[in-house]
Length: 348
Image (tube, rainbow, N blue to C red; front, side, top):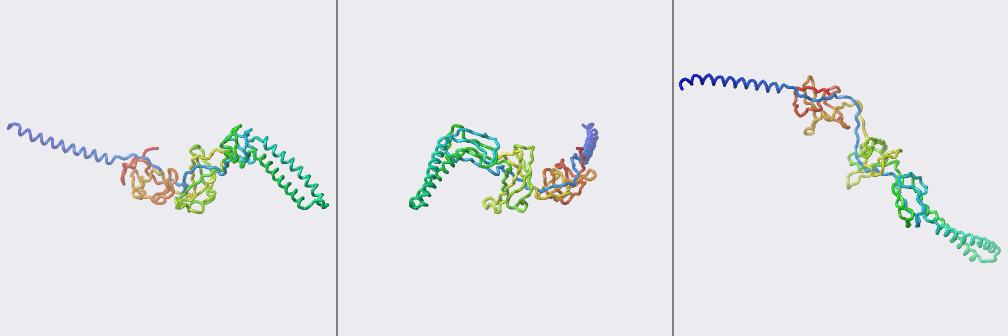
């Protein structure tokens, strides 16, 4: 045991030295890690145009629509149009059976002609005072009644031909050949596809931004690669107290008739435009406690910078204060950054 004590002291000294050396190496390693540059993606602040727009959605509807009701009753004998056909106002759509109506017209016409001749003879006799005025007037009234009956029969015959009341496209046919059609029964539905309307219900706080005549861009989910131009046709003069919104009607012209009633449309109304605006990617903006900041890069060091923003459009945000055109800002890699952090710019 006496021989081991002198050996124990050097051993402990060696362990202590090794421990201190290891700690020093660990400290150097941590220092190197702290100094290591963090890779980030960046983008230059550029000058350009940016617009302020009100965006909303609406179900598209036709400006003019008509449910074509039959003005007469009868059996359908012929159809002249089908669903999807374009028609003009007054164009014949279908024909009802006219045999009975034609006979009624002929009978009333014959009776009317006969009584008109009797009235002519009565007028001659009355002029010679061979018949009384009362008898002549009575005959005159009978002729007028027969004329009204004839006109009514002729109108019923005319109404047996179903015609289009407006220009448009037949969107629905409700009858078939051989069907018995009752008076006032719907037979066709016609819609005028040009123009189409998108009706927006806009919060009253947005009222000052929108005006009749402003241009609008309209897209439909069913036609994702198409963009249509429209304009605000009218704005309701009152706010709906139940919803706090006012009705804005956007008219969209579509000569190619690609838009259809019932399509889900997205409407974008530009109400202001800033030129030579300082623009950054939306990804560069960090919002915390209602304060917007970015990391601006100078000499491979990122500095946190408070900024003021303006309009926003798509992936771009207008900077109204805190940055200058040409500044470099971080767009990816924010999570690992603090103020005055060394960074490595990744090539895009």
